[in-house]
Image (cartoon, rainbow, N blue to C red; front, side, top):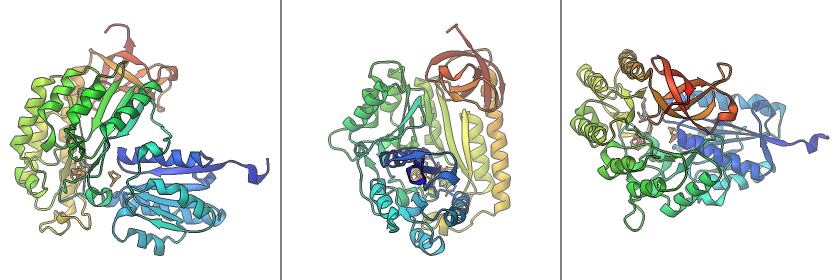
Length: 445
Ligand code: SAH
Ligand code: SF4
Ligand code: F3S
């Protein structure tokens, strides 16, 4: 084979949340339709994509470091095409910064114009740079995705966000909330099930407000009923639920359909009503507790997970203790805990009383320890019990070990082989170290 006949290859660096993981599947689909093949060695790639995140400063700095490293690769391989897309490139001034400080980058695209990637690559092949962060409202149906998460498939239901929590950059980089038509979502899900996917995860920054911008009375609960009624054995998950918009109808829909998982990701952010007010979350500590009670009354086995932030401007020791107290009472099956990071352009950036780093660090340590105790307690209670688990993939750290989740979302490790991926099995939990569960497949239900 001569050099020119060698396959062209792409490598995608994906940072950030599930939205980005799923967008990378779309990017891969576009590149594959152009004849590129995936490689897991960045040195072999002809196209390197950075699908970026800017939710916190630490994420951003790491990414700039990785982009910088491409300079050397490009010197060795002048035809290499470097693409920066995703949330970071949509921030004010970033495209300009890349143009001047990272001149070896060929393409900058935003979060809502992935459909422009094909033409941008064609231009870059002719050494023409493309910097385009316009919103274009592409239709997902217009290109094939290259899915990488079998037996799970991600499905976008709404894009963007209208909530403007005062700390958060997402509404600025992902734009206003737009819902996909219900029939489009339903068609995609039906096709995925026909293709053999066993778990569908609906994605949105706030799935609960799905439909408010569509004609007719389309709601998230209606979407759940539609998908939940589809035939066949599969699991339906969704994220993220904003507490202010989680309706009784949604809780009822989860209860009504056995294939909708008893698992809700319900970010609380803080346990202090005053901090929640200044975050513009639009619920109080009491509202949140009342919602938890409402959920558990209808779904006693539900696994509730959350996101929590420490060190928001003005957070006092008392506010923080309110968060610890909430964590002890709600008993989340797991919590993603973050240190508040100042994001330029958001209201909280210029709030007074920014919390010193040493205090943030102390609080995150205490918060993690607190949640760890809760997780341990829940895990211990699971030992000896049987759970239905979908075999999702290999745990490469151990031989012949696969992992999968219970309906409530807890990850379990057990022995079996890759041929079982995509099957539902019953696993008896045998031991638990705080967050990790170990078990073995059993015939009993
Ligand atoms: N739409 C989701 C959250 C998306 S961002 C929701 O409303 O819940 C994921 C998580 O990152 C947030 O829940 C929050 O806990 C955290 N986060 C967002 N902005 C942040 C910031 N500036 N600093 C630290 N953590 C942040
Ligand atoms: Fe950010 Fe708030 Fe929107 Fe979530 S709901 S994406 S935290 S602004
Ligand atoms: Fe997600 Fe990061 Fe963007 S968390 S929406 S990839 S800023």
